Image 1 (cartoon, rainbow, N blue to C red):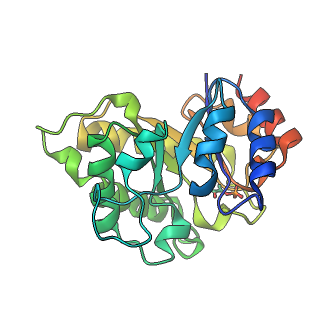
Image 2: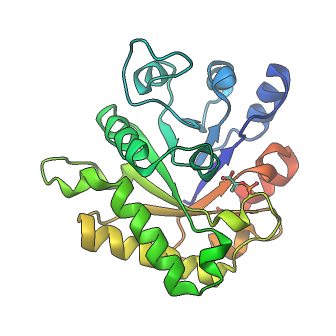
Length: 243
Ligand code: PEP
């Protein structure tokens, strides 16, 4: 079964809408990733889908105003954590910080959805440039996996390939190109980190019309959906495409 992850970002506006939306897409193989403020209520609604967080901090507790720890999230039943989304990188989150978060997420027992992906400036130079960019991000963000003493279960690492130029633009990547990139990411995970069986998702303007193009490729293990996950009817069609 493919993984269908819904990144709601800073939406919807009310708790009532969040609960209604969660109820309408509570299916196996789905991960709902709402804003922190709705995690608890959405968690109460979900019976089959799992819960994810859009971010978390690398300390467990202490004087960190405005931050939320993996430990706190675990207490709410959150199983997945998105780390390094491009919208957070744009706010200044560095590979160094992302790498620290990855360590704590794994140590806390989370399934990590690590987001990587190139800007258009890079992609327009060609696929090789995009591959190099993504590899550099993987090497920096997953540095801990180079330490042989640090063991993770293969299924706990999920890389979301999200070309920045495709996020929220309505301009999705070509499924063939995305599948090639997913294959490349798996090669890097195996060769550089000895991670066999890590999953790779595609994200970037996935909708009900284009979802099956990605979900039918064997190299692509699922999709990370932003905008279209806020429209219940459309998101249900994406879930159906993953079955
Ligand atoms: C995302 O935010 O991860 C994303 C892929 O957004 P969208 O589907 O809206 O492009």
